[in-house]
Amino acid sequence: MPLPQAFALTPTPMLLLPATVTQKEAAGVLRVFREAVQRLPAADQLVVDASALQRFDSAALALILECQRMARRRGSAFVLRDAPPRLLELAALYGVAELFPSVAGTAAASPAPGQPLTTPAAS
Image 1: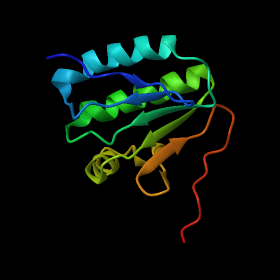
Image 2: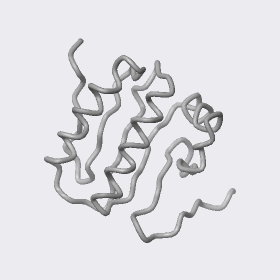
Image 3: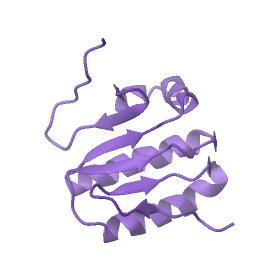
């Protein structure tokens, strides 16, 4: 199975999650993401776009958490964009939802190293 395009060429580095990330695919996707991050220019944020994600298990959470660690090592904030509600429910079930605070609907973000974790006030 060919791996998907790993990143989009945008002003903010963006990693694109494929439609399926289960234990079977996670190691290959992570390898591609690590290689992509090494080639990306430094930026204030590293964005993971989860809009295509349809089929996943806890391996997707592990992959996203590793992307968050990669962002922190770069000194960048981490942004999870367009996470499916089921993914956020799974994160809550595993007790890691606080690592993905809600920002503007289904996006989630973590601050750059040294910055406080904040979430917008509910409207």
